[in-house]
Length: 343
Image 1 (cartoon, helix red, strand yellow):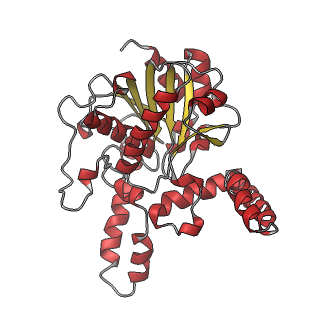
Image 2 (spheres, helix red, strand yellow):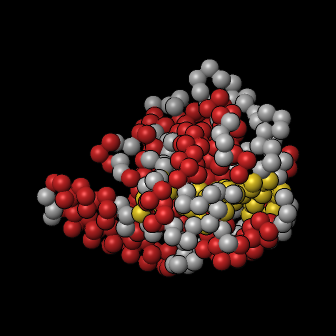
């Protein structure tokens, strides 16, 4: 397994070096165009862009920023304009039943794909839905990306080639928090398309926060007390706003904005009409085991009903890691069958 992982990383590094070498031989304007259209959209560029934005967010130097800064709809690994003409060209078989996929931290929409196979394509075949993949800067505050998702959906629904009858939001990890944030903000704004959002699915989402980020935050506080460890403190302090939000699962600006006590909670009845499915996994195949509770899926611990303020259907799956939730057959079967049930 280690040898296979090392080989894969080596191939990605070689691919990245090749496209970067080509860019270096081009004159200024052509180099910039090549960088954004070929390098950043290549497989190695996808990984590099996702990691850079997720780790540093707005702290990323302007010269290193690229197409991942703005939330975009993606098709065939390219951004799609939100005009009726562009959407009709990108989605020639568009239906009124949309399923939006939101990736997690340090990822892009490509994380959903394994070759040509993905949950969106399977749902299209099984349920007659249209998959829509969204890329966003995972280093920004979750609530900022939630606000952008509300704005993006407003434009998307207005320009979609056929009338939109149903919207399902599916988020992996941080993507689930972004989807929840958007649903709360859409309700606050009273957007007209909100009744079309019937389902929300969260896969491996740290609703009550990620223990790893809480430990890092604690380490930063401890390391800052000594002159010997202050360089480490400065390095860790550069982590993005999105990563910081994961410590407690923040989904609203009132939870992190200066002057607030991080006490915001969804209002009673918030998200009325939106059914929720929260799927979590553990490496352990035994539900409720001590090891499963301690290590979870390596990054997120299992969802517990008492952790949540939302009413949701909760499903646990054993023998999976955090990223296995993106492709596993049991996850897809759970998702498909849940979407088939009456609301």
